[in-house]
Length: 65
Image 1 (tube, rainbow, N blue to C red):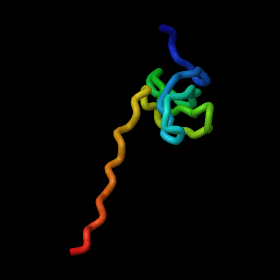
Image 2 (image 1 turned 30 degrees about the vertical axis):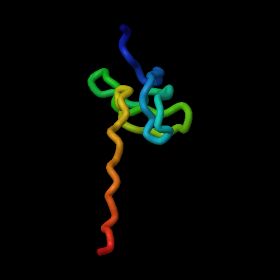
Image 3 (image 1 turned 90 degrees about the horizontal axis):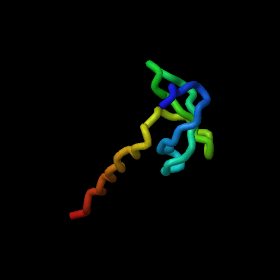
């Protein structure tokens, strides 16, 4: 596998689109992607390595007694 560079395309989970989309690498740390920009919505976020974050748990409202 070749080394990744700034501007290269990678697949990642977009937190705004909520799906796997093409992303452009905008930041590298130790030759690994740190930040990416979604090519669909242009949202910039940390590189998630294609793994979706766990779903948020909703707080239940207190029930009236």
